[in-house]
Image (cartoon, rainbow, N blue to C red; front, top):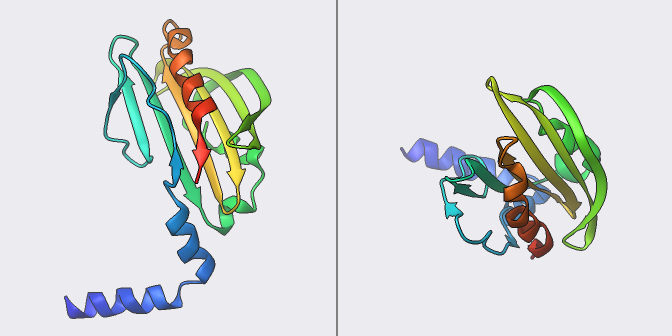
Length: 159
């Protein structure tokens, strides 16, 4: 046990200051609640998540900070987020202000694990961090989830 603690302390001491600062910046943003019908759920690897059972839709918010993210183009990072989709068709691709910066907003249809879905992804770089906000829903209920997603997009504010 002592050895593991010592190794962790040594690794932290050797970590570049930019990585230490970046870790402190993750999950440091404000978002409004998505509204009625959306319940907070375990975000898994994301920072925050909500689910709407009647729409079978989910909202996710995540931040990733560090040199890899601050040096990447927002468009490239937005493309990486669709890696799990098959048969992707992009139905919307535009620049959009998010948290005081220019971000990318894309809407895709495709299959995720064989299930047809529509996914909206908004990505923005700010300082050492990349933030992404997603709406994932069946095509038949996607438009009904847009109002809650729009609330997140307009209310997003990095600290």
